[in-house]
Amino acid sequence: MHWSLFPLAAVPLLTQLGHSYEVKTPPLDTDWTYKVGTDPWPEYPRPQLRRDDWLSLNGIWKWRAASGLAEATSPPVDEDLIDDVLVPSCLESALSGVMVQDVTYAWFTRNFEVPEDWETTAGRILLNFEAVDYEATVYINGKEAGFHRGGYWRFTIDATDLIVSGNNTIHVFVFDPTDMGDYVIPLGKQTRSPSHIFYTPCTGIWQSVWLEAVPASYITQLDVAAGMDGKVTAKVWTGSNSSEAVKVEVIDNGGTVIATHEGSSNEEFTFTVDSPKLWSPNAPNLYNLTFTMGSDEVKSYTGFRTISVGEVQGIPRPLINGEFIFQFGPLDQGWFPDGLMTPPNREAMEYDLKFLKSQGINMLRKHIKVEPDLYYRACDELGILVIQDMVSLRTVTPNAEQQAEWERQIDLLINQHKSYPSIYTWVIYNEGWGQITSYYPEFDIAAHIKEMDPTRLIDATSGWNDHGAGDWHDNHHYATPQCGTPFYSILSTPYDNKRIAIQGEFGGIGHNISEEHAWKVQKSINEVNQTYELSTDLEAYNYRGHTLLRELREQIEKYSCSAAVWTQTTDVEGEVNGFMTYDRRLIRLDDQWKDDIQALYDAAASRGGASTTRR
Image 1: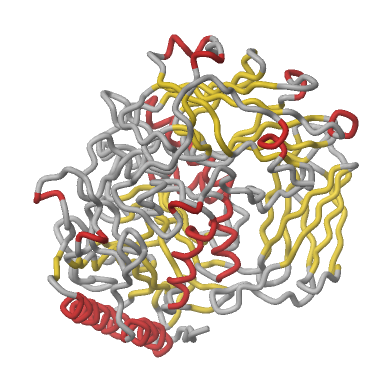
Image 2: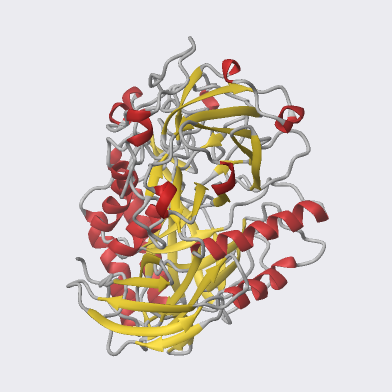
């Protein structure tokens, strides 16, 4: 049973006088800004490991800034936290109700009660955080319950022995240095000095928080990979090293069980499903899964598809279920003017994806950010291939300790997302950001990722310092494409023809926007309407876009180009080079874009690929 309204209806939050929650006025709003309310993100947040008994802790919390790390040793008294904040949200965002800048240390708190029936039916009670940026120290009823480092990854705390009947209190101490001082952490596009391609940062609890009732022995993680041959490889993880019997059922869209298998927990097992409908961008077929271990039953899903590299007419190509399909899509930042890294709601998050699909786009590159799990579920359902970047470090060379921490968090990225069918490529480095050039660690990192996840491709260096690692040869060239061609820029290397050719970023053409769609912050004239090329009107923007897509098509026909990433889905803050404006209210593309995109797929079909048809 979902108890999302329970804590709001039955448990009074702290009521001392302070700033009550109200959406702030953002520098630019969206159609969803004032629809979020005080029960945000009510959906079950983890689509690949679902249970029935859960309790959302999203909503109004209390918060205050803290003075430093010394405060993390014990939670403050409740009277010290009197100002409202919306969870999940970034403190810097309007949706938080706070909209403050440069907060390095902060306390968050809320009260809750556990549903009465959990006290008799639950073996354990888990407290789940989907993402807290950057470090989180968690207290339950005044006692330290856990610590987590890494701003983009989920973590779970066993709260059973700390929870009491009746009222309970959670305190979370957050430390988030972003790019302050000598800190070199995985942060992506976040900066305390936003300008051009770097954006307003996100501090605090920016994804969902929730409680879950589980048996005494329970499943902690599911790894599932299903291939085009019907072979399913699965591993059911638990919190112990013991082996328990596990049963899995595969269920089609009509609710019919089409396959069953029995295996053991903490041990990889395989079985085969006869003649499954395959997953692809044209036919994103998914199958539901039920895993049962003792009294623990969890729901999941998978898609049967195989990603590989093969030669087509002597050219290395990315194959999806044995076929070469040209992949085209945008660089996708995932920022919103009202919520920053947190989308206002699920509808807003999925709006971008549905728009891309409507244009005939079959891929996107999720750019140095990791989204809520429901985002990847939407990509699975819509049939959008995902190139997933690792969250980058700052554009400085890390020391050994910083590099080791970054590589530890690469493991978190892979382990937490390797069962989503839509993700087909992992990116290690973006444009040399944080890349060590005195030696080439991307070779060892790529080998390690292949060992963890042999089912996907690896783009070791997207742009710039390419030394030959990975499956892709990735060139960035603004604005004109140079994909698989003998031409190259000073920042890229000639195509080596041993790997797949991808134009990892190009385009970036912009369009001067009116005040109603502009990010309204105090900036100099040189920090607004920024991009690589700027058109004064939409007619010029679209003319230039069609020219670049024609050049890309010609390179597909003549050279070895297999995929291309256009910059970008939306404007973001000072950048004005999106298919849409930052508020998602103005779509720049005219009708010819669909024809131009289709022409890319048709050109690839003439080189031995499959033509992607519009859905």
